[in-house]
Length: 610
Ligand code: ADP
Image (cartoon, rainbow, N blue to C red; front, side):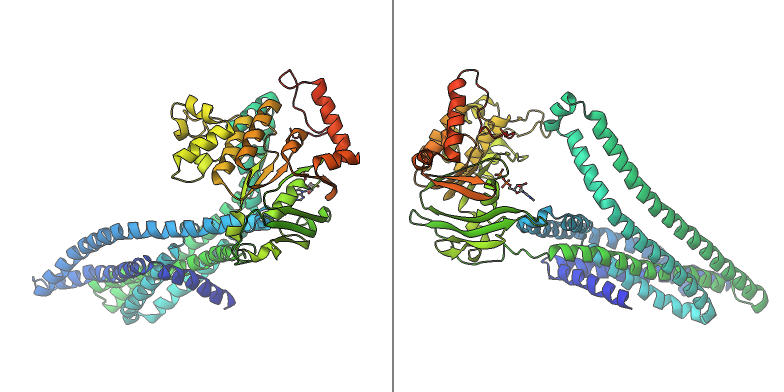
C-alpha cells in the first residue's frame, strides 16, 4: 500500500510538472485522445468477425452484415490515419519537453555548490538522475496506457461476463502472479543497476584516458597502454558480472510468464470446445468469446504492465527528484548587490577551513585585508593553502570558522552570481573548452571584436590567431575537428589570460597563471597584464618571485597560515622565510641567466608544479 502511494505520488509529481510546461497540456491531451482510440477500436474490431459469421450463418446479405464489414475495413484505416496525424504533432511537442528537461537539469548541475561535486554519493545520485533525463515525458505514456487498458478491460468484461464470469477470475489470477514476478525482477534490476554505477564511472575515466589525445603522449612514453586496457577489461568484466545477474532474473521471470499463459489458454480452449459441442454455442459467438478472452488477457497484462512501468518509473523519478532538490546553498544564500571600487576592501577575519570529510585544517586563522586597487602576491610552498584561499574568496567553499567580508558585509549576504562576476580568474590548469578559439576566450556566442583583438595582443595569442587559417573560428582540439588546433601548455595559459582580460572583472585572480611559460615570456605577460589592470584589484599566486615586483603587498603562506605579510622591501628587510626564498631564487637566476639555457626557475621547495 505504501509502495502504491509512493508510485502514485511520484508519478503524479512528474505528470503535473509536464502539465505545467507550455507544451505539456497539448501533449497530454493528444496522448489521451490516442489512448481512447486504442481502447475502443480493438474491442470493436475483435467482436466484428464473430458478428459477421453469425450473420452469414443466417444465409442472406443483410444491412447489418454490410455495416459490420464496412466497419471492419474502415476502423483500421481511420486508426492508422489518426495516429499518423497525431504522431507528427507529438514529435515536435516531445522535442520541446525534452529540451526543457535538459535545460533544467544542467542548470541545476552548473549551479550546485562546488563542494557537492566532489561528493561520490551526490555523483551517484546525479548519474541515476540522468536515467530519466530528456525522457521525463514517458510518465504520460504510462498513465495513458493504464487509462486505455482499464477502459478496454471494462468494455471486454461486459462481453466475457455473458459467457462465464469465472473465465475472468482465471485470467486475473494468471496476470496477478505474472505482475508479482515482474515487479520483483524490476526491483532487483534497479538494485543491480545502482551497483554498476561506480564501475561505470571508473570505466568512463579509463576510456577517456585511452581516447583523448592529451594522454596519447604519456600512454606511449610510459608504456601504460596495456595497464589501462587491463583496467578497462576488468571493469567491463565487473559490469558484466552484475548484468548477467539481471539477465538471469529476467529469463526466470519470462519463462514463468510463458508457462502460466500456456495453462490459461489451454483451459479456455477446452471450455469453449465443450460449450460448442455440448451446449450449442454458435461458432460466431465462440469466435467473439475467444477473441474477447484474448483481448481481456492482453488488456489486463497491459494494466499490470503499465502499473509496473509506473512503479519502475517512480524509482527513477525519485532519484531525479532527490538530485534536483539538492539545495544550492551558496546560490540562494544572499541577495545584496556587491559594489567594488578603489575604496572597497575584502577582509578575511579569523578564517579557518577544513575540506569536507577532512580532519586537517587547509587554512588556519587567516587574517588579511585587501584594498580596492591593491595587487597582492601570495607565495609559499605547495600545500600551504594558497589555492584554498582563492576558493574561499570566490565562494566555491564556505569558511569552517571566521568570516570573509566585502566592504564590511559577509560575502554570503551578496547575490551569488553577482558576487562571482566580480572575479576574473586564471588558473594554472587551463580549462580547454571544446569550442572555437574565439569562443574559448569570450566564452559566449557573440563577441566584441575590437576588445577580443586587444586582449589577444596583450596575452600574446594574436600571432597564433593569425597563423591559423580559420583564425578565431578554429576549433580547439583535433579530436573534434581534424583541422582543429591543439594548444601547448604555454598557449593554453595565454588563452586563459586572454579570457580573464576579456571577461574584465573587478578582481583578477591569478593562480600560477604562467607556470607553463618560460621566464622571458612570463615577464613580458606580467608587464602587459600589469599595465592593463592598473586600476583593478589582483590576487596573484606564484612560485616565481620576479612577479613580486608588480605587487603592492606580499603574503607568505605556510601550513595554512600567513607566516609573513608586508611589502617586498619590508619582508626582505625582515630576513625571514621570504628573504630566504628570494635569495635562493635570485641565486638561481644569477646561475642560469634569463634568455640562456635556463630551465624554469621555481621556488626551491622541492616543488613539482612548474
Ligand atoms: P597550495 O595552493 O598552496 O598548493 P592548496 O590550497 O591547494 O595548497 O591545499 C591546501 C591543503 O588542502 C593541502 O594539504 C591539500 O592537500 C588540501 N586540499 C586541497 N584540495 C583539497 C580537496 N578538494 N579535498 C581535500 N583536501 C584538499
